[in-house]
Image (cartoon, rainbow, N blue to C red; front, side, top):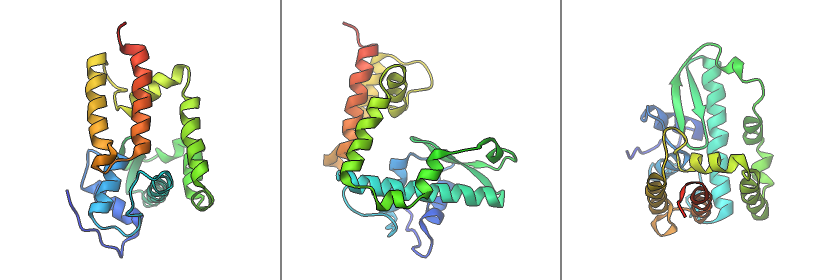
Length: 198
């Protein structure tokens, strides 16, 4: 899909247009690519191989997504499901928002000082700490989630197939992100420990 996005709309409204056109939902990467293809002036049109550009683009998109979710909830018109790998517009259900008492991610992304004050070194530390936090029981689940294989049976052949697909999709030579590719490689190392046979 290639929509020309109206720059009179703010980023949250542009995201709403894209999500309405994709009822099955989209990944963050797909949203960013569609914003770029639609010539949105609300995100940087620079290579995502630069860690700081990647962080700022990610932050702007998630800031807009959380603002949009609050707006849709206030209007009682829809519910926005925001996940790290899947973002989807859902029908409005009364009471869903009431179930979320505290959302630290929402608080983080709505505090624009986190965008303004984050340096490239801070981004590097965030990336390093992500995998450190995932050590132990959570590392396997995090790696499967990154590969979008958390639901259903998984074997080594499926993991290798998904790995090749993700590397092809996110390789810097094809406009992907070096940081994302590093995360994919790290996830593959973890999954090989659990699934490959000696």
